[in-house]
Length: 152
Image: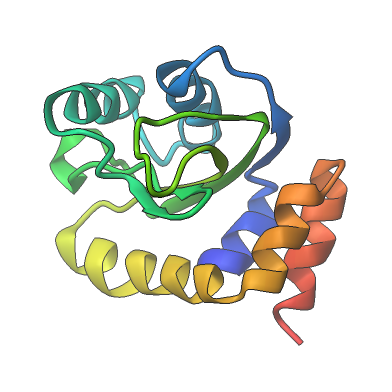
């Protein structure tokens, strides 16, 4: 099951998450992976620690971050999550802040992580109109409908 199919079928989305800061956003939003059995709570803790140690490595484009860690750091299965933040949150990346869209990835092995997950997220990020629509969505159902439109 691909990225979009997973998000639609598993309803792994949160719309308009309120977060106090980037750390709060990572942990609250990452519950979509934990609830779906794709990652452990420690996976989210590892992401936070890595950002503290290495800077905002998860910020991949203006307004977009892709929270992820290595497979052995708590990924249990291939899983995705899509979270919009309202209001957007500063991740300390001056070129791309504030962040409005979090696209979570958990992959149980390096091949799935590199070949499937990253490629599919990159494809979504290339669709600027779709990203804008996702960020402006007012409900999880609206996000699902926008994602369904990408399958046509």
